[in-house]
Length: 242
Image 1 (tube, one colour):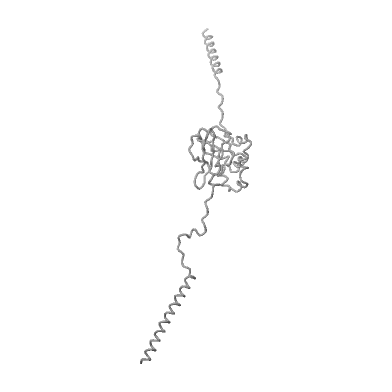
Image 2 (spheres, rainbow, N blue to C red):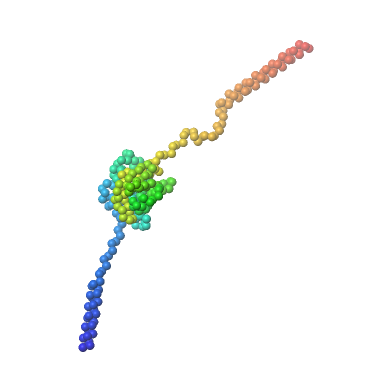
């Protein structure tokens, strides 16, 4: 009898454990973080083909996606439309060197995640990813009535709409290609011919000096001739007295 009770107690205990385990919910696996597909983001807009081509040709697409994996500040991309590129002066892009094309594309990338609200409190100038001999290329961002305006010193345009805005990446559409003044601004005028000789004392011209010396020699000879003539007159007069 005691053995039967022990077996019954064991069965009840095992049944209780099985029911408890089956009632415990199994946690679903969390979502895995996947790299941002910038091409997919831009391709949804169907009007950024020129920008995507430049991002790939300059290998900046890979650079941006790599940065987003490790950046704690995020990135912001201004995306000019195909019409914005078409409105450039013919030959503008082809007239740039490979290094200048890289600088132009990186000028559209800000090394921080910006929302319209963050733009409102941002101090100008805003640093971009592009750099040159004078350091980082910058631009100015202003906001008026919830409208974000971007100025480069050469171009000024409004941010049309937000294509993507989820940390760590924000992508904003713009209707103009942002041209940095470092590449497209007025160039310093070349020095005028002969300007480097200003302040230098020029040596006298040998040809100009020679006639003067000849004139001095002629005058000296004439003076000597007059003195010799007077001596002759004096000698004749003395001779007549003797």
